Length: 380
Image 1 (cartoon, rainbow, N blue to C red):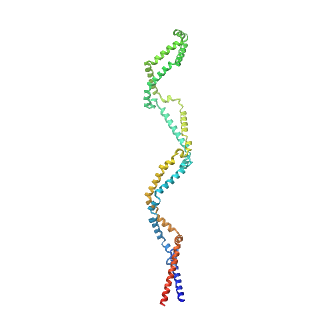
Image 2: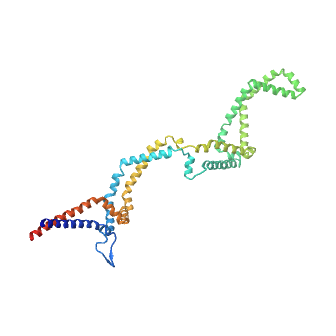
Image 3: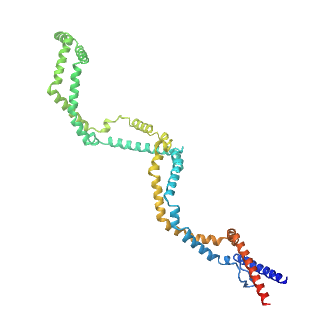
């Protein structure tokens, strides 16, 4: 009986010592959180292992994350893949469609977003100012010299080259006119008016030549002969040419002296405003002017942008990660953790395993106690 009690007692003592020792060792990983002092003398094993080595742990954890977890190759495999590129392309195109091509914002609204207000009125005012300035400059240029000085030389040469055609046109139409009934009536009226204006002498001439119809026919034939005569063309052509030469030496201002320039300005500006219709044109959406814009951007713009972004990201990935200094970020975050949070984090993950270590210590302590008991009994 004493033998069994002795063995049980030594097993219990061994188990208590083993379990308590392991439990204390686990607690000493984190506790105490700060160093403890008696006067100026710091107690051994304070603070706990992890609080004492937290700076080294943070630095090592930062290097581990940088070297093995968040490496450039990891980002390439996880983020810079063809599948991610397609997803990014689809995401970007959906946003472009939703916010641009399917938006009911007008061009005026978009300009307002950019900070440009009252654009149609400002543009119209600027255009009208330019038109007015150009018109006044044109007036000044036109009225500042003679026709020869103002009109381009090639215009003058072309006009002179067409004088024979004008002469032929006039004579051709004159021949047709005087051979028509209208021309005959006009000749009769001219003859009657002429003879009437001569009084008695006119009546005598009329009696001598016969009736008016006969006289008109004779004059008509003579006029037609005159028109088709070769000398008539040369005479009329010479007259027109001489008048054209005289016209070239006349000041343009003299020819256009009574011209309504202000009316011309107003008409041109009114026409320009009607054609511009800026208010109506700006009150339309992007889709109104670019109905196939979504399809075009999906085929030409979005893939190019995403491909460029992924290519540049891959080229700059390693350099960018170096600039981010992830190891220092991890170290700073770990250093900033309160030890209690770090303790809860580790214990929350390994709580069950730590309990098993405590139980294992008690079990081993109990076995050691039994062995010690047997050895004591054998020696006695």
